[in-house]
Length: 130
Image (cartoon, rainbow, N blue to C red; front, side):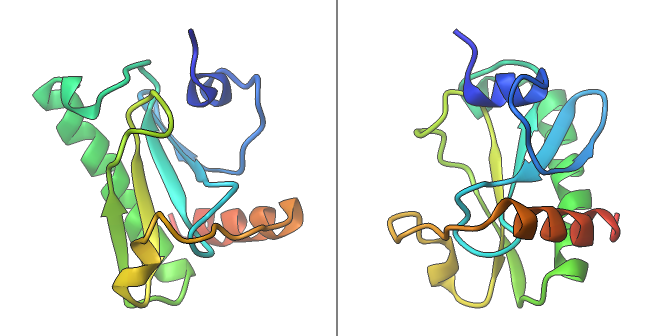
């Protein structure tokens, strides 16, 4: 069964796209930990990130690096943190999270409620830095 990410990749569910190439898609998390929280996913439907081949894994991280640098330019932060958890959606993905403190990567805290207009503005800011 297709995950929500597969449906986003297929265009069945809209997203606030940051960037994409032939094999990857980066888009804003609609329930972010902080402003500018981006998800990077392979377009290949695969549940567990460590089931990717070495080449696929390397390419996904290269793609994430490009997006993380754009986030750092667009969103004031000390660092862009990464997390790979893989429990909430059965599709491999990397979280890219602008951070001021380590608590910004705390997935147990309440997520932000952000309007579609604000997500659109943030996605444009990040896209303009790629």
